[in-house]
Length: 327
Ligand SMILES: Cc1cc2nc3c(=O)[nH]c(=O)nc-3n(C[C@H](O)[C@H](O)[C@H](O)COP(=O)(O)O)c2cc1C
Image 1: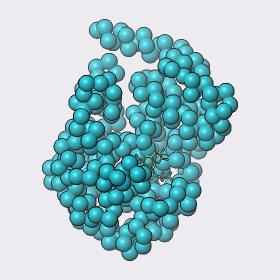
Image 2 (image 1 turned 90 degrees about the horizontal axis):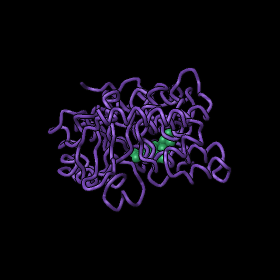
Image 3 (image 1 turned 30 degrees about the vertical axis):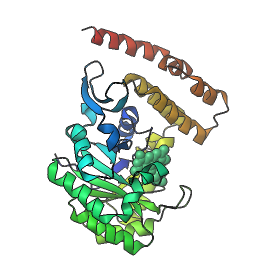
Image 4 (image 1 turned 45 degrees about the horizontal axis):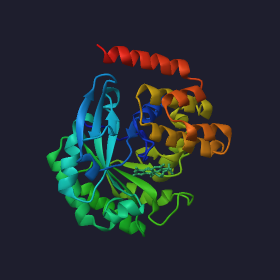
């Protein structure tokens, strides 16, 4: 079924953060659409798809290892967006075929300014190659039933961004996410909502506005300022995922504990859970204090469960898993 991109609040793609427990956390608080972390096509091509009967998940696992590259479950099937990094249409299609039946949409990252992406011709490197963008998006559109979208940054001038956005629209994408910063901008530079507005005015396909949403009220502010259908938030959600709740944010301590519980339940990669917790702690507190030090030192979910007073929950989940595994 075609995913509806109008009037939605969206969890942005975030590397090492946007794994299954974080996406479910955001959805629990009110996110309508949840993006996974960017995964590179080369990586996907080294993977196989497995049903995990113990967890009830679909796992994409790197062959010859136990490394779960992507984990999803049926509950999020209608709202999870798989974001891929690519620089080649044929490779992108091959990789996308591995996951497209298990997700609501497929998104191509065209905004990442990190040298890893740029040197591989991916992320923001695509922004200067409109023919390649066209090739990638039309190849995916023609060959997959899954909706295809992409996420871009602003170009040097608003006119250039609009021109590129118009070309992207012609490929038949279902939506376009626009991060209101240029490649050279730093996260602390204010997002340019007025330049997102120029894109919205020029397109008829839904635009998802992204940049500097830190409170629930900002969803409405950026919609009014840009005219965009939908809004995407990254850091605001990382720091407190209950940003999606119309009732206002919950205390970050509660959100963090709920994240730990979900990470335990879905057996999230421990490194990625620790990374996300560290990001939360760095924002509200400091890694040199006892909590931060203990997260860094944790070697297992038993350690994290103890730290956050969730030992009973951890034991309970383990028991259930054992009984399911032995059935
Ligand atoms: C920790 C982190 C990881 C990110 N990873 C990705 C990613 O995998 N793909 C992507 O397109 N953008 C990524 N971004 C960029 C965000 O999706 C978003 O465009 C940017 O942070 C601006 O939104 P914000 O002002 O709400 O933070 C990441 C941002 C952060 C903070």
